Image: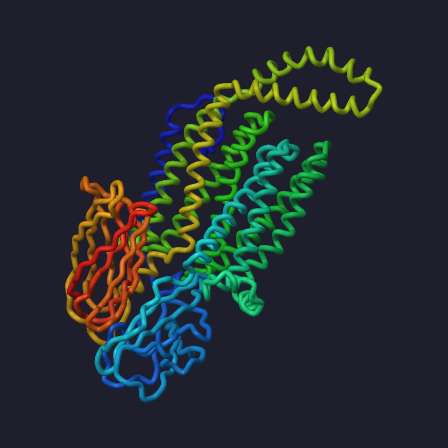
Length: 640
């Protein structure tokens, strides 16, 4: 809904222009702060170095392998595994030893003595301080590189079917929170009559049910999400107990307890409060519900703030309350928007005063969102390069663009709000109801059967409500408002999806820190960017095209891989599935699978692709253009 001040009669055109200028100033301030930068910070932990380094060749076998991270992590018995060329464990199979000193986070595992020469694979998995699982793998060689039967894992921690379901639950949890908190606030602040409206009651209750169910799913899946990736482990009692001992597990349990208090709040709001007729008593109860509901809503929002991005990195003591304010403002705005949409479409009784009150609430929410969003952006991104060159930064740009679209649509909603009137509707409704009031009461009172009298009364009430709704629906101003609010809600759904993705994406500042700060024990093999062009034909309709691949820097160690697909017309072409695999046939290494992420139409990318040694690598590309049309093509490339 409108994020501008409430309407107070006709206003000059300078109001919209002032709002646009304010929005432009806020956006400029965001990017100005990003340019200013700040000291080091982190949210997702990232591997910043290792000893031996990735791709290193050492003369003698080391006594241990150590890994350095950008922030504190939680490790278990198998968090770091070292495998020899045959795939057997080369470490002592004990819990990694904490070697951290000061601000340096380092863990190590001891190796067996007398290890033979060859290429060894180090696979690691941990949980970062912001609750997200992280994993990776790299290789080093003793004496000289050798053949290895170990394939680097293709699935990142938190991926697979379990990761998909967990992410869906995460999205549902945010959606449920928004409906629960925003719907309740809309009733208490904007439209108290909504407490008796069944559609409003259903909206808030469904928000509570969604948040509760999503929280339970996340609690059960937390163990397989951060570990094995198998659904069967969701009911492993030992794994569940270990989850409860972690910060994310405690946050989920706390959320469930707070949802119990929220259930009591809902019962009072739509029970005692809805039936209260004395205005003075209702006013006192409104204040009590607002205070109690505010405490519960703040507590639920804090379960996210205290266990995710805001809880780690620089200025955590400031970031957590800022994150709580951000979540509450989102709920008040988007949850109120959903409530207004339901009220406009499903109830005939909401008046223009309630719509204008929500306009004021939306304006205040946007101001809070702008202030807290600027701080969060500065904290998680910090530079132009991180804003434009990382997945987190690109998602942030998309989020800002969606907010701008949402505000633009809200401006049209505000114009319709300013034209709303209730007098015409009331007079028309009264004139149509008068004939019924003269005829029906006699038939109801004359009927000796109480059940039939009650049934007739219900029918009359339903008929009256239907007429009132028909009259209101015929109001062009109200119809225009409904359409614009529906458009706002559609944009808000996409905005919520992007926001959810941001919460599970490594912040740009951390990604740049990890990419630029990894120490190397030995210089990687020299190389240069690899550029390949490969035509394909899956045999189906629109199955012809060209694959273009860039690998940078094109040497051993970590590489960035970009894939573009052009159709037969030379334009970017999207396909349902794209997979790559790298094989060094001369050393019997691989295939090492690569599953790139889609960045834009016809453009995919994968970062930190590990190439363990130099050589003539065969690059297999699998392209699927339909459910049944698929082809695998390959080409060799000299790397390193």
